[in-house]
Length: 132
Image: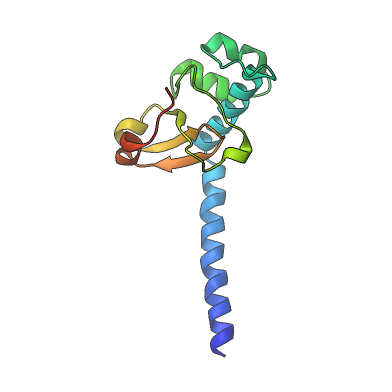
């Protein structure tokens, strides 16, 4: 009986976590940053040219229109010239390369250099590693 209760409790916890993760992935801010990540990687291309300005993202505009508009409008701030990492580098000294404009004061979502999207408080953002 105790084993069944433990398994049931674990399933309830996991359901809550996956529900919260689903909510995050459905948020416009999360999705905008996912598209910004796609835009930055498309702009870098195979030559690994680091995007330096909004015009560098133009090529991917039709594939990621919400991300492009978020950057253009200033709702997402990009640290231009930031080096990008590959998926194999997730969790390895990832630096912030883009973020919602209110993150420094209110917290919110940030895009890290290997494509991870993470929610941070304003204090976490202030102490986070930022791309040069």
